[in-house]
Length: 419
Image (cartoon, rainbow, N blue to C red):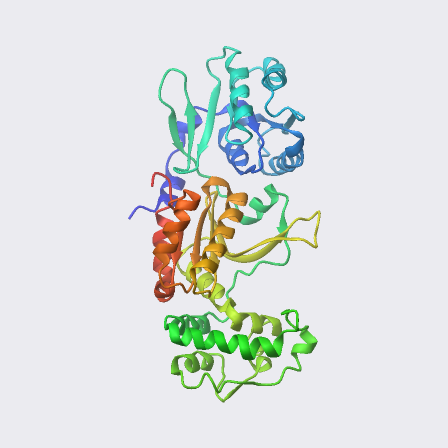
């Protein structure tokens, strides 16, 4: 089977070289990832990017300017062109871009993936009206992962677009930062496999969920359903496992955490290798699935998969959102949401939230999957495909828990260009 990422990395870029420009106009929208990709692929050495922005995207334009300055040392500093509040004003857009372009020598280019449709149309007309036949008009095709070169007199030219973008760089493009260091090494992956194994048995999974709700949470959470402080958790007594003992598969899973008697001690489990007692509580209460998925992704991907919270540096108290497991292939974001929920409504909400967040960060190229304990994942996937009009969403259910690595690898492989 063709590995599309290795194919793209190893292919010659001679075709794209013919369309590089000296001056590249980039339309700044709410996601600057396409602009970043285009600047890397379409600018000649010592070329200049021109970031066309509105009042609403001025901060994003400034961030992109600073990022390009550090990452594209072969090019000149980016120039900012402000449209103010006139993002759909034909005369203003034509006038602003036209005045700058008329003064420029050498080859011009316009990449119009970002910005509004009105900005794209009027910017295109402004440069087309200069009657410079070598001007390059381009956009990114998110479905095929290609840069498309538009031509007036013939079909568009398609060139595979490859550039490696890290998760950290993706966050920087949005002005975001980690709330805390990301988790890249799964906690207790061997035990997580055992937990996944007994969750393939719906009855055992229900028994475990009941124990978590009635025993674990009752002992480790306050009246507002929040975890106790670390100092309070140190005083939590041993928890009875009497209701779990008839289920051999559950007890075998607990034995992988060195639980050998009829009581469970979160303090003893912590010594197994968990950083904090709160990590023990969250892991037992469902985060084991996140670590299981993280381990499965790492086993099939050479990319660096992580789990993390991200936040707005301008408002550190506000969590923007969490990704259970995410990784990049080229400039394409893959986000996997994880939940032990086993009913359709809860799973659907979890997946839809992940879909919106991934598209916000990674644009139309982003791909999203859900790993859950629902028994009919294909039904759920079909409903989300109708809602989002995105056929590349994936849902992995209870029956997939023990062969996730193969399922995820198959899904990722299908997401490359020209698929």
